[in-house]
Length: 443
Image (tube, rainbow, N blue to C red; front, top):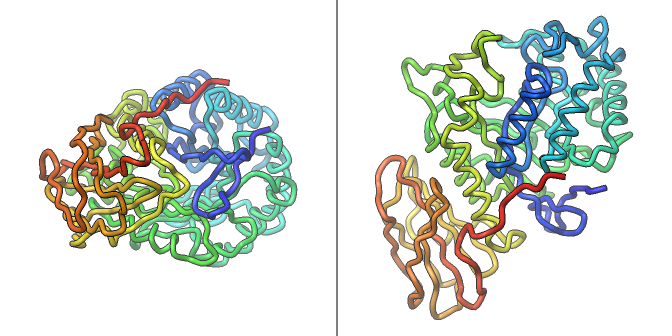
């Protein structure tokens, strides 16, 4: 059976044979609750073709997940008792997970949304968990899926972990790990207040294998790299990522009439900022898709188009170019390095730099010019490229003589004019940026 593990450098996830797993996730929170099997199959094939490697799904879903049945009329629990799971409901979950495996996709499996522990203003509940029930439910669901290869556990559900509910989240995580120690696990925190991360409460927890942050949906140009940098620098080192950034087609701060909508540029900016800051992967999200919005359901927070239409919004296509870029270079050596930048820009023009064995990446969110300190590179010449994160095209600038300080100007500049500068050492004999065989094979 395939297994993912944390890499020896504690910065990435790898398969047991050492091949790197690049997490390119999508949010499909309501897939088990709202989608038919045919709809799930369509969704999974769409995401496979776009190069995604993982999606999120919630077993006890957010929107009336306990009292509103799934597409086949089944509720997940009998009498809302977590110790009495409804087998017919879970057989549907099984089938979706199996379909994902055939599409080569991992499942970020969320056992329960947080409103089953804590309502807050947007929770529907009902509250059904205490530590004892969480432990038992964790052991049950962990046992059910412990032999399924394509599972990554996501404890939590858009809630904090440091309040009175901490013993419940701890019990759920420990319950799963007690019977399934082989699958990786993280924790999904809330957004707001600049974002939160699993590290705030559970960095040292034995069941937490890597940190997941939520930078959230409050504003454009939110510096999500800050929360990644913070987690990257924690000790002991654990892989980290932004697991819920601004979603494409989501109203800015839930006020689209006043502030507009996040678009493909916002999705790209969040992705490149996070990954170049040290994240081992990234999760994209699309507002109508995660809720599987259609005329069967009321729109959640201003969803404005059918999920089938939203599947092919531009940002979803663009994410594969990030994956292709990362996979076209040695991945386990990639690390953030802001010392490459002579000038540290802030706000929408903030650049992020990283480098690995034989290469440098610099993300320019608004194009323009960047001046680099290249003293750390030893080759007398370098090969340079401009990589287009919208198309995946690489513009070859050729081999040029390296100097300690060099300036480069993107093909164009201005809002939404993001580019990636790629600098290669010719001795590394690397392919053009993004030149990798991408397809997610079906099994």
